[in-house]
Image (cartoon, rainbow, N blue to C red; front, side, top):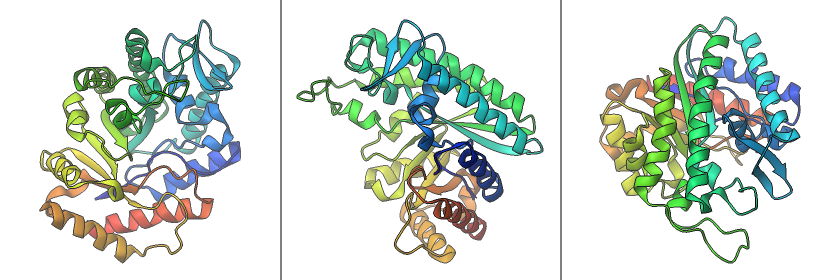
Length: 329
C-alpha cells in the first residue's frame, strides 16, 4: 500500500507553498502531489486553480465569486501566473524525482455549481454554458498534463485527481439559486457522466491516470467508474454500506481507491501508526478483501484537504499515513 495527500496544505504566502512542496516530496515517497495553498487567496484555491487550467474562456473574480466574462480579469490572470509559478517551484525542488506523481483539479460539475454566468446565477442553470465549461476544462487539462510531464521528466505514472465535492448536490437538486430561495434543477446521470467523461477521457488521452475525489456523502461511485475514473478517493467516515461495496468492487477490478483515514484538521489526540493500520485492516475485513491482494491499489490519504490544519499536523498526518502504508505492505 502507498500514501498520498488530497491536495491542499496550510499557509498564506509563497514561502508556505515552497515548504508544502518540501513536506509532500519528503513525506510521501510513493505518490507525492502538487500542493494547493488556498490561504494565499482565491486565485490559489481549488476553483482558481481549475479556472487557470481551462482553455478559451474569459473569467473574472466578482464579489459573489468567479464569473464567466468576455475577457480574463486581473484575478484570472493572477491564477494562471500563480499556477505557473507554483509549477516552477515544483520543478526546482523535484528535478531529480522519479516514480509516481499526482496533480488535482476541480471537476466540471463543481465548477458549474460555483461559477456564475456573465449575467449572474450559476453556470449550472444553463445547459449550453455547462457544456462549454466542461469542454474548456477538458481541453485545458491536456496542456496542463503535458506541462507537468515536461517539468518532471522522471515521472512514469501521472495521476490527475478530479475533485467533485458538489456532484452529489448537483444530482440531487441541492444547489441553491442566486436568490437563495430555490434550487437548481437536478442534472440527470447520463449528462453528468458525459461531462465527466470528456474530462476523464482527456486525461487518459495524455497517458495519465484519471481519479475522482469527493468527501461528500451520496457520491455516485458507480457513475464515476462508468464515466472513466480509474481511481476513487473517499473519506472513510462518510461512507454508507453501499459505498463500501462500490469501493470494494473497484479494488477487486484492479482500480485504485484512496481511503481517507486521517483527520484533515488537528485532532484532539493524534492516532498512532498501529491504530491507523488496524483501522484499515478492519475496513478490508469488512469488505472481504486481503491486504496482500489489493497491494498498491489501496492508497491511504487524509479525509480531505489539509488547508485548515496547522503546518505541524499536516506534516505529521502525511508521516503517519506513510508509516501505516509501510506496515500494511
